[in-house]
Length: 324
Ligand SMILES: Cc1cc2nc3c(=O)[nH]c(=O)nc-3n(C[C@H](O)[C@H](O)[C@H](O)COP(=O)(O)OP(=O)(O)OC[C@H]3O[C@@H](n4cnc5c(N)ncnc54)[C@H](O)[C@@H]3O)c2cc1C
Image (cartoon, rainbow, N blue to C red):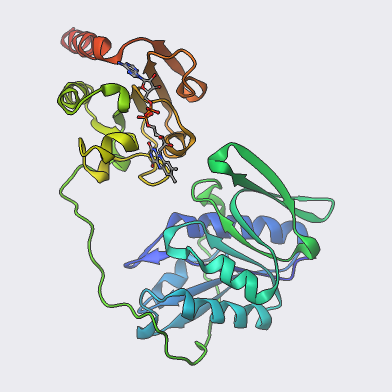
Protein backbone atom coordinates (compact mmCIF):
# COMPACT_ATOMS: atom_id res chain seq x y z
CA UNK A 1 0.00 0.00 0.00
CA UNK A 2 3.08 2.19 0.24
CA UNK A 3 3.13 5.37 -1.79
CA UNK A 4 6.29 7.43 -1.48
CA UNK A 5 9.40 6.28 0.35
CA UNK A 6 11.90 8.97 1.36
CA UNK A 7 15.54 8.06 1.97
CA UNK A 8 17.66 10.72 3.70
CA UNK A 9 21.05 10.56 1.96
CA UNK A 10 24.15 10.53 4.20
CA UNK A 11 27.42 11.92 2.91
CA UNK A 12 30.47 13.62 4.32
CA UNK A 13 32.92 15.83 2.45
CA UNK A 14 31.84 14.63 -0.97
CA UNK A 15 31.86 10.94 -0.07
CA UNK A 16 28.65 8.97 0.03
CA UNK A 17 28.22 6.84 3.16
CA UNK A 18 27.40 3.15 2.67
CA UNK A 19 24.31 3.52 4.84
CA UNK A 20 22.76 5.53 1.98
CA UNK A 21 22.98 2.52 -0.34
CA UNK A 22 21.72 0.19 2.39
CA UNK A 23 18.65 2.41 2.81
CA UNK A 24 18.07 2.66 -0.93
CA UNK A 25 18.23 -1.15 -1.12
CA UNK A 26 15.57 -1.41 1.61
CA UNK A 27 13.47 1.23 -0.14
CA UNK A 28 13.66 -0.68 -3.44
CA UNK A 29 12.68 -3.93 -1.72
CA UNK A 30 9.62 -2.36 -0.12
CA UNK A 31 8.63 -0.57 -3.33
CA UNK A 32 8.96 -3.82 -5.30
CA UNK A 33 6.58 -5.56 -2.91
CA UNK A 34 4.12 -2.76 -2.23
CA UNK A 35 4.49 -0.32 -5.10
CA UNK A 36 5.39 3.34 -4.78
CA UNK A 37 8.35 5.50 -5.62
CA UNK A 38 11.68 5.81 -3.82
CA UNK A 39 12.92 9.39 -3.43
CA UNK A 40 16.47 10.11 -2.25
CA UNK A 41 16.60 13.36 -0.25
CA UNK A 42 19.98 14.97 -0.87
CA UNK A 43 20.79 17.97 1.33
CA UNK A 44 24.00 19.92 1.70
CA UNK A 45 26.36 22.49 0.28
CA UNK A 46 27.86 21.78 -3.19
CA UNK A 47 26.38 18.28 -3.24
CA UNK A 48 24.53 18.28 -6.58
CA UNK A 49 27.19 16.06 -8.20
CA UNK A 50 26.44 13.28 -5.72
CA UNK A 51 22.99 12.83 -7.27
CA UNK A 52 24.50 10.75 -10.08
CA UNK A 53 25.33 8.04 -7.53
CA UNK A 54 21.72 7.69 -6.44
CA UNK A 55 20.44 5.80 -9.48
CA UNK A 56 18.62 3.23 -7.32
CA UNK A 57 16.12 5.99 -6.44
CA UNK A 58 13.24 6.94 -8.75
CA UNK A 59 14.11 10.57 -8.15
CA UNK A 60 16.50 12.74 -6.19
CA UNK A 61 15.02 15.63 -4.19
CA UNK A 62 17.88 18.10 -4.01
CA UNK A 63 18.42 21.09 -1.73
CA UNK A 64 21.91 22.44 -2.39
CA UNK A 65 22.55 25.58 -0.35
CA UNK A 66 25.41 27.01 1.72
CA UNK A 67 23.11 27.05 4.77
CA UNK A 68 22.74 23.27 4.55
CA UNK A 69 26.37 22.48 5.30
CA UNK A 70 26.07 20.16 8.34
CA UNK A 71 22.52 21.28 8.99
CA UNK A 72 20.78 20.42 12.24
CA UNK A 73 17.48 18.70 13.05
CA UNK A 74 15.87 22.14 13.27
CA UNK A 75 16.27 22.50 9.51
CA UNK A 76 16.04 18.89 8.32
CA UNK A 77 12.90 17.83 10.22
CA UNK A 78 10.57 20.55 8.80
CA UNK A 79 11.98 19.88 5.33
CA UNK A 80 11.30 16.15 5.60
CA UNK A 81 7.84 16.93 6.94
CA UNK A 82 7.17 19.11 3.89
CA UNK A 83 8.48 16.44 1.50
CA UNK A 84 6.39 13.71 3.15
CA UNK A 85 3.30 15.73 2.39
CA UNK A 86 4.39 16.65 -1.16
CA UNK A 87 5.32 13.08 -2.13
CA UNK A 88 2.58 11.39 -0.07
CA UNK A 89 5.34 9.44 1.60
CA UNK A 90 4.25 6.80 4.06
CA UNK A 91 7.78 5.73 4.94
CA UNK A 92 10.95 7.69 5.75
CA UNK A 93 14.26 5.82 6.03
CA UNK A 94 17.02 7.41 8.12
CA UNK A 95 20.49 6.14 8.96
CA UNK A 96 20.92 4.86 12.50
CA UNK A 97 24.05 6.97 12.71
CA UNK A 98 25.36 9.98 14.61
CA UNK A 99 24.62 12.09 11.52
CA UNK A 100 20.88 11.37 11.72
CA UNK A 101 20.64 11.02 15.49
CA UNK A 102 17.54 12.73 16.89
CA UNK A 103 15.77 13.26 13.56
CA UNK A 104 13.51 10.21 13.78
CA UNK A 105 11.84 10.97 17.09
CA UNK A 106 11.15 14.59 16.14
CA UNK A 107 9.71 13.72 12.75
CA UNK A 108 7.63 10.94 14.25
CA UNK A 109 6.16 13.32 16.85
CA UNK A 110 5.37 15.98 14.25
CA UNK A 111 3.81 13.53 11.77
CA UNK A 112 2.07 11.43 14.46
CA UNK A 113 3.40 8.20 12.95
CA UNK A 114 5.45 5.49 14.70
CA UNK A 115 9.24 5.57 14.87
CA UNK A 116 11.09 2.24 14.59
CA UNK A 117 14.67 2.47 15.78
CA UNK A 118 17.62 0.05 15.29
CA UNK A 119 15.97 -1.68 12.31
CA UNK A 120 17.97 -4.76 11.25
CA UNK A 121 15.43 -6.51 9.03
CA UNK A 122 12.58 -5.60 6.68
CA UNK A 123 10.15 -7.90 4.89
CA UNK A 124 6.70 -7.67 3.38
CA UNK A 125 4.29 -10.30 4.74
CA UNK A 126 0.71 -10.58 3.50
CA UNK A 127 0.99 -7.09 2.05
CA UNK A 128 2.21 -5.56 5.34
CA UNK A 129 5.67 -4.27 6.10
CA UNK A 130 7.32 -6.10 9.01
CA UNK A 131 10.45 -4.54 10.51
CA UNK A 132 12.86 -6.25 12.86
CA UNK A 133 14.10 -3.91 15.55
CA UNK A 134 17.05 -4.60 17.82
CA UNK A 135 16.46 -3.95 21.51
CA UNK A 136 18.74 -4.02 24.55
CA UNK A 137 21.98 -3.99 22.52
CA UNK A 138 20.96 -7.08 20.56
CA UNK A 139 19.62 -9.24 23.38
CA UNK A 140 16.12 -9.03 21.89
CA UNK A 141 14.95 -8.79 18.30
CA UNK A 142 11.38 -7.58 17.96
CA UNK A 143 9.16 -7.79 14.85
CA UNK A 144 7.04 -4.68 14.37
CA UNK A 145 4.19 -4.21 11.94
CA UNK A 146 3.52 -0.59 10.98
CA UNK A 147 -0.14 0.36 11.25
CA UNK A 148 -1.24 1.48 7.74
CA UNK A 149 2.37 0.92 6.64
CA UNK A 150 3.25 4.43 7.85
CA UNK A 151 6.35 5.19 9.86
CA UNK A 152 9.82 6.60 10.30
CA UNK A 153 12.49 3.92 10.31
CA UNK A 154 16.08 4.19 11.45
CA UNK A 155 18.24 1.62 9.63
CA UNK A 156 21.01 -0.06 11.62
CA UNK A 157 24.33 0.49 9.76
CA UNK A 158 25.74 -2.71 8.27
CA UNK A 159 22.51 -4.69 8.66
CA UNK A 160 21.52 -4.57 4.96
CA UNK A 161 23.56 -5.11 1.79
CA UNK A 162 24.79 -1.83 0.33
CA UNK A 163 25.03 -3.45 -3.13
CA UNK A 164 21.22 -3.60 -3.29
CA UNK A 165 21.11 0.20 -3.36
CA UNK A 166 23.75 0.86 -6.02
CA UNK A 167 22.85 1.51 -9.64
CA UNK A 168 24.47 3.03 -12.73
CA UNK A 169 21.21 4.69 -13.78
CA UNK A 170 20.95 8.47 -13.75
CA UNK A 171 17.97 9.54 -11.64
CA UNK A 172 15.88 12.62 -12.39
CA UNK A 173 16.69 15.49 -10.02
CA UNK A 174 14.05 17.77 -8.57
CA UNK A 175 15.12 20.88 -6.69
CA UNK A 176 13.33 21.51 -3.41
CA UNK A 177 13.12 24.65 -1.30
CA UNK A 178 14.11 24.75 2.35
CA UNK A 179 11.32 26.09 4.61
CA UNK A 180 12.18 29.63 5.78
CA UNK A 181 13.47 30.17 9.31
CA UNK A 182 16.50 31.19 11.33
CA UNK A 183 17.98 28.12 12.97
CA UNK A 184 19.35 28.54 16.47
CA UNK A 185 22.04 25.93 15.81
CA UNK A 186 24.54 26.85 13.09
CA UNK A 187 27.54 24.97 11.76
CA UNK A 188 30.81 26.78 12.51
CA UNK A 189 33.66 24.49 11.51
CA UNK A 190 34.52 20.87 11.05
CA UNK A 191 37.15 19.56 13.47
CA UNK A 192 39.16 16.71 12.00
CA UNK A 193 39.61 13.74 14.31
CA UNK A 194 43.14 12.91 15.39
CA UNK A 195 44.46 10.59 12.70
CA UNK A 196 47.87 10.02 14.20
CA UNK A 197 46.79 6.69 15.69
CA UNK A 198 46.15 3.36 13.95
CA UNK A 199 42.73 3.04 12.30
CA UNK A 200 41.44 -0.20 13.84
CA UNK A 201 38.57 -0.41 11.34
CA UNK A 202 41.12 -1.00 8.56
CA UNK A 203 43.11 -3.79 10.25
CA UNK A 204 42.73 -7.39 9.11
CA UNK A 205 44.09 -8.73 12.41
CA UNK A 206 43.10 -7.31 15.80
CA UNK A 207 44.36 -8.44 19.19
CA UNK A 208 41.72 -7.17 21.61
CA UNK A 209 42.44 -6.79 25.28
CA UNK A 210 39.91 -6.61 28.11
CA UNK A 211 40.05 -6.14 31.85
CA UNK A 212 41.58 -9.64 32.03
CA UNK A 213 44.87 -8.17 30.79
CA UNK A 214 45.20 -7.00 34.43
CA UNK A 215 47.39 -3.88 34.12
CA UNK A 216 48.88 -1.30 31.77
CA UNK A 217 52.27 -3.01 31.64
CA UNK A 218 50.77 -6.14 30.08
CA UNK A 219 49.45 -4.18 27.09
CA UNK A 220 52.92 -4.35 25.53
CA UNK A 221 52.65 -8.17 25.50
CA UNK A 222 49.51 -7.88 23.38
CA UNK A 223 51.20 -5.26 21.18
CA UNK A 224 54.12 -7.63 20.51
CA UNK A 225 51.71 -10.41 19.59
CA UNK A 226 49.73 -8.08 17.31
CA UNK A 227 52.94 -7.01 15.59
CA UNK A 228 53.94 -10.63 15.02
CA UNK A 229 50.51 -11.33 13.54
CA UNK A 230 50.70 -8.21 11.34
CA UNK A 231 47.85 -6.43 13.13
CA UNK A 232 47.09 -3.93 15.87
CA UNK A 233 45.79 -3.85 19.42
CA UNK A 234 42.28 -2.73 20.32
CA UNK A 235 40.37 -2.95 23.59
CA UNK A 236 37.17 -3.12 25.57
CA UNK A 237 35.90 -0.02 27.34
CA UNK A 238 37.37 -0.60 30.83
CA UNK A 239 40.87 -0.69 29.32
CA UNK A 240 40.24 2.66 27.61
CA UNK A 241 38.60 4.13 30.73
CA UNK A 242 41.73 3.22 32.70
CA UNK A 243 43.77 5.18 30.15
CA UNK A 244 45.83 2.15 29.13
CA UNK A 245 45.03 2.74 25.43
CA UNK A 246 43.58 5.76 23.55
CA UNK A 247 39.86 6.07 22.77
CA UNK A 248 40.59 5.43 19.08
CA UNK A 249 41.22 1.77 20.04
CA UNK A 250 37.86 1.13 21.71
CA UNK A 251 35.59 -1.47 20.14
CA UNK A 252 31.86 -1.56 20.80
CA UNK A 253 28.71 0.45 21.21
CA UNK A 254 30.47 3.63 22.24
CA UNK A 255 33.60 2.86 20.22
CA UNK A 256 34.36 1.57 16.75
CA UNK A 257 32.73 -1.26 14.78
CA UNK A 258 35.35 -3.57 13.32
CA UNK A 259 35.24 -6.51 10.93
CA UNK A 260 38.78 -7.94 10.69
CA UNK A 261 39.69 -11.38 9.35
CA UNK A 262 40.86 -12.35 12.85
CA UNK A 263 39.69 -10.94 16.21
CA UNK A 264 41.65 -12.41 19.11
CA UNK A 265 39.84 -11.50 22.34
CA UNK A 266 42.07 -11.71 25.42
CA UNK A 267 40.36 -11.44 28.81
CA UNK A 268 37.16 -9.92 27.43
CA UNK A 269 33.88 -11.08 28.97
CA UNK A 270 31.77 -10.47 25.84
CA UNK A 271 29.26 -7.90 27.10
CA UNK A 272 26.59 -7.02 24.47
CA UNK A 273 28.00 -3.48 24.23
CA UNK A 274 31.38 -4.90 23.26
CA UNK A 275 30.08 -7.63 20.93
CA UNK A 276 28.01 -5.06 19.04
CA UNK A 277 31.27 -3.71 17.62
CA UNK A 278 33.05 -6.97 16.73
CA UNK A 279 30.38 -9.55 15.84
CA UNK A 280 31.13 -8.99 12.17
CA UNK A 281 34.71 -10.35 12.40
CA UNK A 282 35.33 -13.32 10.10
CA UNK A 283 37.09 -15.38 12.77
CA UNK A 284 36.73 -14.75 16.50
CA UNK A 285 39.08 -16.51 18.90
CA UNK A 286 38.56 -15.94 22.64
CA UNK A 287 40.79 -16.68 25.60
CA UNK A 288 39.15 -16.38 29.00
CA UNK A 289 39.59 -17.95 32.44
CA UNK A 290 35.81 -18.16 32.91
CA UNK A 291 34.36 -21.06 30.89
CA UNK A 292 30.92 -19.43 31.11
CA UNK A 293 32.05 -16.05 29.73
CA UNK A 294 29.53 -14.86 27.10
CA UNK A 295 32.38 -14.17 24.64
CA UNK A 296 32.41 -17.93 23.99
CA UNK A 297 28.86 -17.61 22.57
CA UNK A 298 30.12 -15.44 19.71
CA UNK A 299 33.62 -16.96 19.34
CA UNK A 300 34.38 -19.53 16.63
CA UNK A 301 37.22 -20.94 18.72
CA UNK A 302 37.87 -20.52 22.43
CA UNK A 303 40.42 -21.44 25.07
CA UNK A 304 39.54 -21.56 28.75
CA UNK A 305 42.92 -20.29 29.91
CA UNK A 306 44.92 -17.44 31.41
CA UNK A 307 45.66 -15.05 28.55
CA UNK A 308 48.86 -13.89 30.21
CA UNK A 309 50.23 -17.42 29.97
CA UNK A 310 49.05 -17.88 26.39
CA UNK A 311 50.21 -14.60 24.78
CA UNK A 312 53.93 -15.39 24.84
CA UNK A 313 53.40 -19.01 23.73
CA UNK A 314 51.20 -17.87 20.87
CA UNK A 315 53.74 -15.29 19.75
CA UNK A 316 56.52 -17.86 19.73
CA UNK A 317 54.35 -20.34 17.80
CA UNK A 318 53.54 -17.70 15.14
CA UNK A 319 57.20 -16.68 14.86
CA UNK A 320 58.23 -20.32 14.47
CA UNK A 321 55.64 -20.86 11.76
CA UNK A 322 56.85 -17.73 9.93
CA UNK A 323 60.47 -18.88 9.86
CA UNK A 324 59.60 -22.33 8.48
C1 LIG B 1 25.94 2.60 27.27
C2 LIG B 1 27.13 1.67 27.38
C3 LIG B 1 28.06 1.66 26.38
C4 LIG B 1 29.15 0.78 26.44
N1 LIG B 1 30.04 0.77 25.41
C5 LIG B 1 31.02 -0.14 25.43
C6 LIG B 1 31.93 -0.26 24.33
O1 LIG B 1 31.87 0.49 23.35
N2 LIG B 1 32.88 -1.20 24.38
C7 LIG B 1 33.00 -2.07 25.44
O2 LIG B 1 33.91 -2.92 25.41
N3 LIG B 1 32.19 -1.96 26.49
C8 LIG B 1 31.21 -1.02 26.52
N4 LIG B 1 30.41 -0.92 27.59
C9 LIG B 1 30.77 -1.67 28.84
C10 LIG B 1 30.33 -3.12 28.79
O3 LIG B 1 29.02 -3.23 29.31
C11 LIG B 1 31.25 -4.00 29.65
O4 LIG B 1 31.30 -3.49 30.95
C12 LIG B 1 32.66 -4.11 29.10
O5 LIG B 1 32.65 -4.46 27.75
C13 LIG B 1 33.43 -5.16 29.90
O6 LIG B 1 34.76 -5.15 29.50
P1 LIG B 1 35.69 -6.41 29.77
O7 LIG B 1 35.11 -7.59 29.08
O8 LIG B 1 37.07 -6.01 29.40
O9 LIG B 1 35.65 -6.53 31.35
P2 LIG B 1 34.92 -7.58 32.28
O10 LIG B 1 33.48 -7.67 31.98
O11 LIG B 1 35.33 -7.25 33.67
O12 LIG B 1 35.56 -8.98 31.87
C14 LIG B 1 36.88 -9.34 32.07
C15 LIG B 1 36.99 -10.77 31.61
O13 LIG B 1 38.33 -11.18 31.70
C16 LIG B 1 38.38 -12.51 32.19
N5 LIG B 1 39.70 -12.66 32.78
C17 LIG B 1 40.19 -12.15 33.94
N6 LIG B 1 41.50 -12.45 34.07
C18 LIG B 1 41.84 -13.16 32.97
C19 LIG B 1 43.05 -13.74 32.50
N7 LIG B 1 44.18 -13.64 33.21
N8 LIG B 1 43.04 -14.41 31.32
C20 LIG B 1 41.92 -14.53 30.60
N9 LIG B 1 40.74 -14.00 30.99
C21 LIG B 1 40.70 -13.31 32.14
C22 LIG B 1 37.22 -12.61 33.15
O14 LIG B 1 36.81 -13.96 33.29
C23 LIG B 1 36.16 -11.76 32.44
O15 LIG B 1 35.36 -12.54 31.59
C24 LIG B 1 29.31 -0.06 27.57
C25 LIG B 1 28.36 -0.04 28.58
C26 LIG B 1 27.29 0.81 28.49
C27 LIG B 1 26.27 0.80 29.61
